Length: 346
Image (cartoon, rainbow, N blue to C red; front, side, top):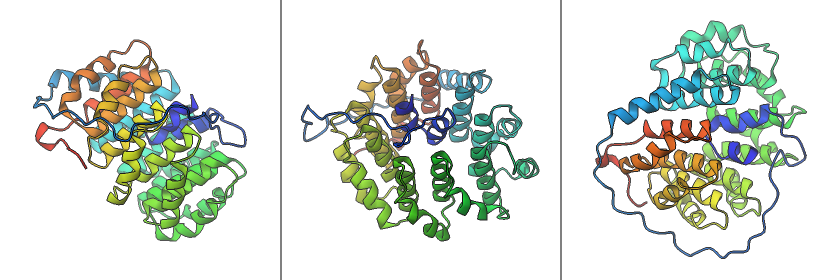
């Protein structure tokens, strides 16, 4: 499960943290030997087809998100909140406010993070009642949300959670510091580059790079060539978030990585940077027998945003094996852009 969670949307790493990935490598998978030489250049994407966004497909996608929000599966509910954050936004604050009262810590965490990202001010009274939540990751998310709402009373606690005995708390602290983007966080994040856990080091590097720090960039570039596919996927996504053209060469090179899962994540990263260069990789992965690849493909197609991906996403929306695949497809469908806005090349 860890491989799937670590390469998905923002909350997926946190979801893996909740289910207890232990060990000195922070839940990372085994190193995979490289045996097949990669081609020098990825296949060129086909010309964009002028396809109208199907309103019936959008309606079905929203229905899938609604179903996931009502799911009794805690992780699906958690992922649905993030999908709602990405494609519904602050228009329906009740989605996130109700999550704060959920019995499951994962759902409370997701709700607090979404409220912080969307800056839903009416949540502040509830958040203040949650500062001593029994779950440490929820406490971090609550402090993040309050800071985003202008209340920094508890933000000093990030200095403590950055040194927490549990790697999950350290990694999540590094992540929210990057999302907050406060320059003063650099002094907390830099020592975390020497953390004993890979997940913490890479998350600190991503957050530093979000703030333009070159030390964070160097760490991510190095990790993108790691022998561990998990490290590569985290590093590739970390490289893309500032949308800095200087990393496009690294992202394009990852499209021809030795591992198929890395290639699909690179396709998503290129999409986040406005390129459809990974479109052929994502559409091929959408037909994979592995539900983790189909999920990654859906997320990549949403990031790329081409309207002619609707056929692939319509099939994924009806996936019989995985609710995560259906939810990823639903989010992607609602992210598709009109043909005139579809990105081409770099």
